[in-house]
Length: 167
Image 1: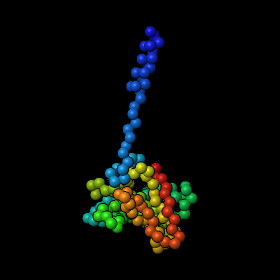
Image 2: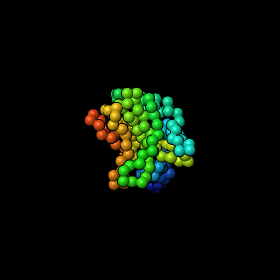
Image 3: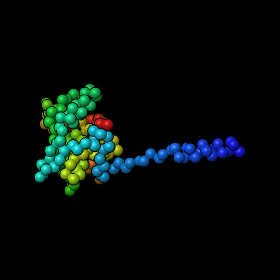
Image 4: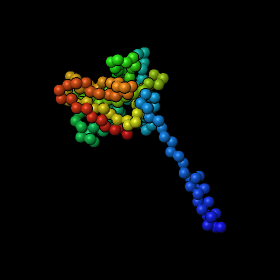
């Protein structure tokens, strides 16, 4: 009898003590804002049609540290928010793009806009897209295929595309 009561008590503790981990949906088109402290900061603002990056030095430092940690050449200097309109679609997408001093390395990530403020978007795996190789060409551009958007690199002879997780 004591053994049965002990088993029931243990089972109750397990039921009460266990908590279901909530699964967050992660559809890139839902505009879900990333949750970590760095990634949830306001990236920029839209002010009368002008797209402005807030704290560009903070973002460049963080991205440069990530590139250096992965032995990827390029010291990012210029950073801007661009509005992209892919061919064969009416939708607009926002992308944060940073370029190295020599313009051979371009790093980008999707943004979402909420109340005229830009945030990093949170798809299944939040990552930087790196286009490396040429001064002209090899730029991050938005492509939509079968309803799924992605950042690709425009063509150039020496262009190489890579991805780097940023959380």
